[in-house]
Amino acid sequence: MKISILNTIGPVASATTDAGTSPAIDSQCREAIELLKSGNTSGAKAIIDNIHDAKGIQLARKQLLEMWINTCDEDYDTATVNGIDTLHTLVAAKQRNNVDFLSLAATTIYIFAFIHYKNGENKKAGKELEKAQKLYERLAKKDSDRFTPALMAAVEASTEIFKSKLKKMNILAHYQVATELYEGKVSAGTTEAIDSLVDSITAEGDIHLKMGNYRDAVRFYTKALRYRKRISMSTGPKELRISINLGNALIHLSNRREAGEQLLRSMLPAANKLEATAEIEEINKLLESSDQTTFDIISFWKKLFSKSS
Image (cartoon, rainbow, N blue to C red; front, side, top):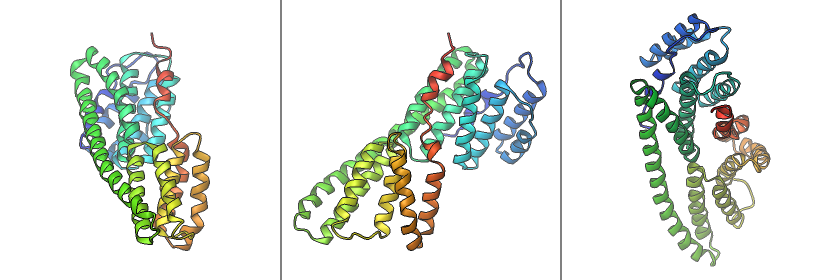
């Protein structure tokens, strides 16, 4: 996103200290937030690491700040874990629907949208931004000065994502035309025509993968591999690349995740044989993050607000 996530950090500072909570922890969180605003993530991390015995909303705030820091450091896998922890803590919170709860939920969901956008998962990012925006709208009605900047950040981020999606749709249309042309030449059975068709179909799959259209991505990658087998039954760099992307798309589908993991594991020997170091690292990373990939922020929505009036 061109839009900074900076405008969403200020509102999560605790405005008041509730009974039974630690004023010291609130003070530490506010200090960490000021450091984050100035770009001092290492200083903020040092403070957060020294916060102990936080519970309830204070624990959620600490976990969210850890998510923020790891997002700033572009460690999106760790940030995802932090975000999941934050939502679990919020789900278990006794106090619901107050300003602190809503602001923590909104900012967590917004940062998830940022992470998913950075990972090319626009479909998830768009849904999450809609949820965050609704929460910020509610909060802005309660405290305009405090929450309007965050609301505007969510609105601008939504605009950025939709523009990006439109651009991808335009590119996809061009590949669809190319694919039709190549398919008309494939009947001759020439290697060159088939290879060009595979490239075009693969490009369509890549765009669907980036847009979060995982079922369509699976369909195109599978088709590309089927055509590729007409040329060669061995696994070369191109087959490896398509197979990794196919596995990536499959693990995003809850009913196909195991198939995706199995495919990725089966590609490791081929990647090792080709000495494809980057691809080996990518496969291992996809396998490690498979559980996180299936995490759906929207599924937490009802849990977060199931006790709300």
